[in-house]
Image 1 (tube, rainbow, N blue to C red):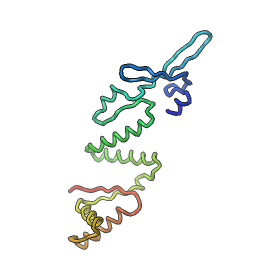
Image 2: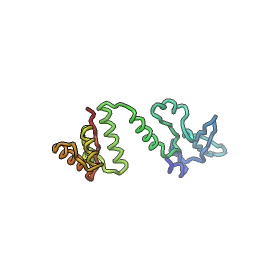
Image 3: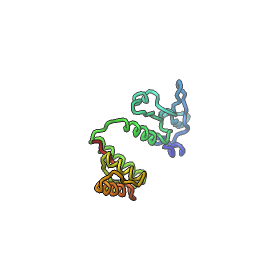
Image 4: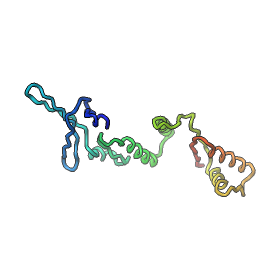
Length: 176
């Protein structure tokens, strides 16, 4: 989008624009790509609406629960800002298993877009109980296994090594 505007190309219709018009209405400024064509002695002016210079005021009110502030096309990092706001919103929601799976697929695809190793095969999920997590924290903080049975100690060390060995993992703590 930015490259098109810098080259003088209208992002809406793809034609060369003569200039970019800033029109102030109330407290907001709206952008128009202006196309001027001269034929014979006549001048034809056509304008393509490009949106607000900063943010959509009325539409944003419809997305306050999600914390989204919808921006115009000259806000070049708007998609990343939307993703951050959606992430914050999803942290507050109870997701069923179907939505969790869909979210996991989307995150995997986003990791691919970011050039990070991803894919289901690239990330391992380690599931442990709250009790096992407490044991691991005790082992990690104090290197102590006092009060643990030998079986718990062995499992704690195995999980600790698995979680903190090289590679990418998601640690899932089950609540019982």
